[in-house]
Length: 104
Length: 104
Length: 104
Image (tube, rainbow over all chains, first blue to last red; front, side, top):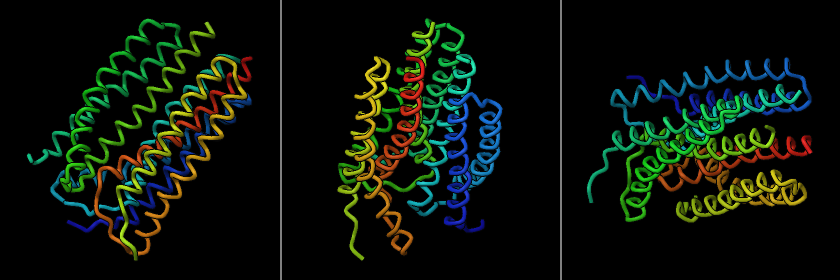
C-alpha cells in the first residue's frame, strides 16, 4: 500500500476547505446586501471546492479502514478540522441566505 | 486498564453525533416553515443523542488523563470533529429557531 | 528544540477558546434582546481571547513544520477542535448581530 504524503494531503484539504470557507463568508455578506445571485453562486463554488477536500480526506479514512496505521500529524488534524467546520459553516450560510431572501 | 475499542467508540460517536446533526438541520427547515413545535422536538431529540456521543468521548479523555497513551486513529479524530461541529451547529440552530419565532 | 508540554498548551487553548465560545453565545443572546453595544463588546473580548489560543496552537504547527514529531494526545485534539469550532461560531454570531441590527 502506498505511503501517504501527509503534507500534500493536508495542504490540499486546507487549501480547498479554506477557499470554500472564504466563499461561504463572502456569500453571507452578499446576502446581507440582497445580492442573492452572487451569494448562491459563491456557495455553489464552495460546494465544488469541498468535493476536492472531502475526496482527499476520504482516501485517508479508507486506507485506515484497510489496516494502515497512520502517523499522527498536527497538520492533518488541522486540515480535518478546517474541513468539518467549513461544512458546518456552509449549512448555516445557506440558512442565512434563505432567511435574507424571506425578509426581502 | 481496559484496552479501548477505538472503532466501536468512534462509530458510536459518529452515529449519534451524525443523527443529532441531521436532526438539527431538519429543525431549521421546520422553523423556516413556521413549524416550531416540530423544530423544538427535533432539537430536543438531538440533545439526547449528543449525551450518548459526549459520554463515549469523555471516557476517552478521562482514560488519557489517567495516564493511558492512546494510539492515533483518524476515525476517532473524525468522530471528535463530528461531535464538536454538531454542538456548534445546534447552538446556532437554536438561535435560528428563536429568530423565526420572533419574526412570526 | 524544547519538548512541548502538551497538557499546558492544550489547557491554554481549551480555556481561552472556551471563554471565547461562552462570550460568543452570550453575544447572540444580547443581540436577540437588542443590547447591541453589549453584544459587540462580548464579541470583541472573544476576539482577544482567541488570539491567545491561536498563538499557542500556531507554535505547535510551526514546531511540526520544523521536523518535530509530536505524540498524539486526545486532549490536544480536543483543544484544536474547540478552537476551530469557536472560530466558526464567532463568524456566525457576528452575522446574527448584523441581522438583529438590520431588523431593529
